[in-house]
Each structure stands twice: as C-alpha cells, then as structure tokens.
Amino acid sequence: MSKLASDTAMVMAAGMGKRMRPLTATMPKPMVRVAGKPLIDHALDRLAESGVTNAIVNVHYLADALEAHVLDRKAPRVTISDERDQLLETGGGLIKAADLLPDTFFCLNADNIWLDGPKSAFHDLSARWDADKMDALLLLVGHARAENFKGKGDFHMDGEGRLKRRQSGRIAPFIYTGIQLLSKRLLRDAPEGKFSTNILWNRAMEEGRLYGVSFTGMWFEVGTPDAIAHTEDALKRG
Image (cartoon, rainbow, N blue to C red; front, side, top):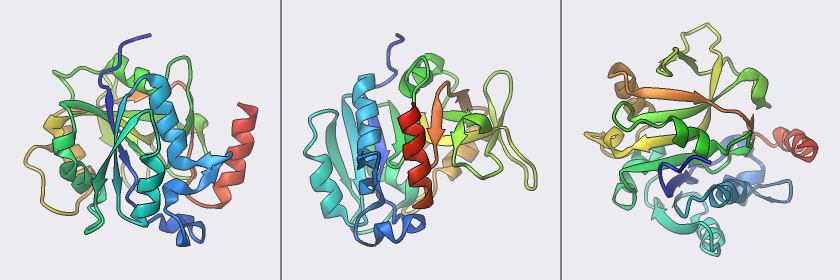
C-alpha cells in the first residue's frame, strides 16, 4: 500500500443541510443516520481505517450536538474549528482552520459515503499526488460509479489529469466526490470571510495546478432524505 500524503484531514461539517429537511430540522446533517450510523462517522471511520490520525471538523449549525459527538472519538483525533459566529462556506472554512492544517492535507465533506476499490480513496489520492505540480487533487468518479447522482457531471480531465469545468448545457464525464488532497499553497491570498473553494480552484485551474484522479470504488450522493434507503440497500449488497 502506498504511503499516505498526509496524516490530517479537514472534514466539512458546518453546513445547514437544507436539502435534507425535514430530518435536519432538529439535527445537523452530519448526524443523520444511514445504515445504522451518522453520516460523519462513515467519513471519520474511513479516515481512521486508512491511517489518517488527525481530523479538523468545522461546526456551525446545531454545533453543540455535533461537537459532543465527534469529540467522543479516539480515532482519528478530532479538533474543532468553530464557525458558530458565522458560516464561512467551504473556502472560508479552510481559511478559518488554516493554522490547524499542515502543508498537505485531505479535505472531505462530512456527508460522503463511499465503498473503496482496490485501494482506499485516500491512498488513491496519495499515489497520484505531486506537490511540485499540484495545488489541489480532486477525487472524481464516473457516472456509472455514482449512485443517486442525477446531475450532468462537473469536470473534464485530460491525459495528464488536469481539469476543466463542464461547459453550460453539456455533460461532463467526471463528478466531484467531495474528497480532495490539497496543498496549503491553494489558500494563499484568499478572500476574507465567506466564500467558496471554487474561487481557489479556478485560480489553480488557470495556472494548470488543478488535477483529478479517477476513483476505483463506488460513491453515493446522499443529499436528500429519499436517497437514504437506496444507499442503505446498495451498502448491504456491498
């Protein structure tokens, strides 16, 4: 097994979870249970299994419940990045947590569920990582490996792995899984306050430093309540 590129991951868990209502009226989305455990535990368990020892989890919506839950864990060790005062979106959340992050780190959404292929998602990313060439390496999945996904895709990828966005009205072959490996270089000269990581990705794309790797496993979009039962059935089938 290849060596991991980092022992640390940023887990994005601060969102409002509006698409998951009514389940999120009384709990944060990462606490919604799928196949017997909260979404965030699926993500944190995968990190622990892969050898990632540190997780920075950002919190905002119903933060007390989420914080109490994750701080109970032994592996990975969890540090809280507190966004109770202001929800900062993905880019702002990274900047808020920057002092807690090493030079290279994984980043993933707390509501991700996936089944690994021959290698774990984090080993897939690590094997492809080239710190000299990349500011961001996104884990991508083709439509056939994306359960519950109804969109048109996100990216085109060239033979070297460099990414271009889907053009309006077109279909793109690759979907972003919400899992990536980042260099802290990506965070330089960032806007202040609330903003999307897309701003940083766009700059990396223009500089030829935004790359992707095709995932060898299965990925599930669990964005709405009606996706839960289908995901549970697929997980039972393995």
